[in-house]
Amino acid sequence: MLEGKNVNLRVVEKEDLPLLVEWFNDLEFWGEHEFSGQSSRTEIEKEVEKSSFEMKDFIVEKKDGSKIGWVCHFYMLHPGGKLLEIGYALVPNERGKGYCTEATEIMVDYLFLLKETMRIQAHTGVRNIASQKVLEKAGFKKEGTMRKGCFIRGKWGDGYLYSILREEWKEPKILTKTTSSN
Ligand SMILES: CC(C)(COP(=O)(O)OP(=O)(O)OC[C@H]1O[C@@H](n2cnc3c(N)ncnc32)[C@H](O)[C@@H]1OP(=O)(O)O)[C@@H](O)C(=O)NCCC(=O)NCCS
Image (cartoon, rainbow, N blue to C red; front, top):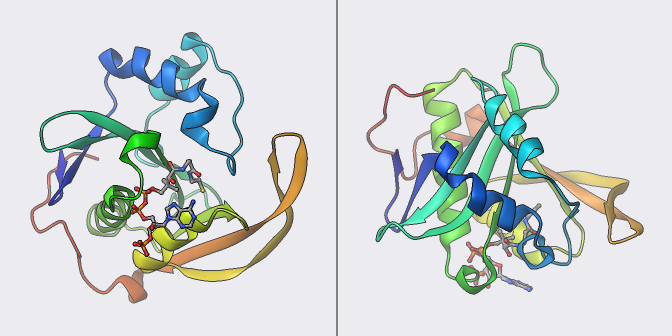
C-alpha cells in the first residue's frame, strides 16, 4: 500500500477485476479526451496478470477504503525498464478534488524511490486541460506536441508529451515511508 494524505494506491488484486471491467468499458470513465475501447474480463485479467517490475496497475482508494480510480505505470522505451510511462483515470464524481494530482505525486515518488527510474512520461490530448494540470502540478514538464498522436472517438488529434526526470524530482513529495513491494 502506498499511503498519501487523502488517497492510497493499492496494487490491483483479482477481486478488483469486476470493478475494472465496469470502469474500462464505461465511456464516462475515460471522458471525452481519452481513447476508450471495450475489453472483456479475460483481456483485462491477462493485462493484470502481466504485472511486473515495469508494469503495474493500482486502485486509487480514499481513506475510507472507497475505490475511486485507477493509475498504472508501464515500460515504454527502454528494455532496462528505466523509462516508464504512467496513465490514470478517476470516476467522474470524484474529479476536481485534487485526488489525481496526489495519486500522480505518489506514483512519481514510488517510481523514483523504489526503482532506478530515470524518466517518467505521460501523454495527454491537447484539449485535456484537467490532465495537463495534474501533470504540471506533479512537476512534469511539457516536452512538445505529438502531431496526430491521439485517436479519440473517431478522430485523430494532437497530444502533448510530458515528462519528469529524476534530477527534477529531487525528493519525495508525499511518500515518506516506503514498502519493499515492487
Ligand atoms: C484527468 C483526470 C484524471 C484528472 O483528475 P482530477 O482528480 O479531477 O484532477 P485534480 O482534481 O487533481 O486536478 C485537476 C485540475 O484540473 C482542473 N480541471 C478539472 N476538470 C477540468 C476541465 N474540464 N477543464 C479545465 N480544468 C479542469 C481542476 O480544477 C484542477 O485544477 P486546479 O487544481 O488548478 O483547480 C480526470 O479528469 C479523469 O479521470 N478524466 C478522464 C480520464 C482521463 O482523461 N485520463 C487522463 C489520460 S491522459
